[in-house]
Amino acid sequence: MPLGLSQTFAEVKPTLPALQHLVHSNDEEVLIDACWALSYLSDGTIGKIQVVFDVGVCKHLVELLLHPPPSVLIPALRTIGNIVIGDDLQTQVINFLVIFSLCILVLYAQS
Image 1 (tube, rainbow, N blue to C red):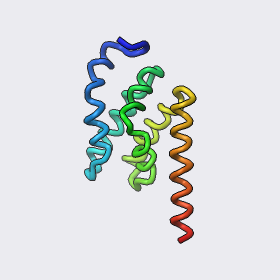
Image 2 (cartoon, rainbow, N blue to C red):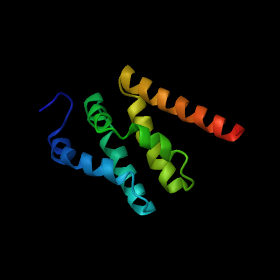
Image 3 (tube, helix red, strand yellow):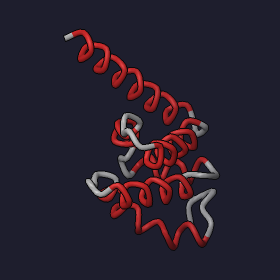
Image 4 (cartoon, rainbow, N blue to C red):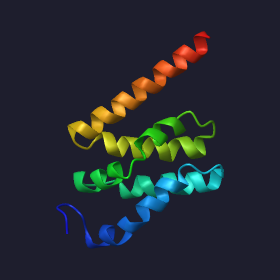
């Protein structure tokens, strides 16, 4: 078992590809549940954060910060918060995605 991963986490790790798919859903309830699940799974060790990070949900989680209802925004933000307390690379990727998204918003607002 990889360093920092509990037996329980190892048992739920196979659900991550499904969660990665579900965060792209148009159903708000599905989005909420998927984001909360990712938040819980990324809360803890750098090993857990890395497993969630490796699934490739970061870009879409940052995009969900623009999702109007707080019921989606809050668990997306919690997951991002969990990831940025990881290692330097994880933090830098989130920082880049947030800055990139803000630049797109500014350019969109100016046009």
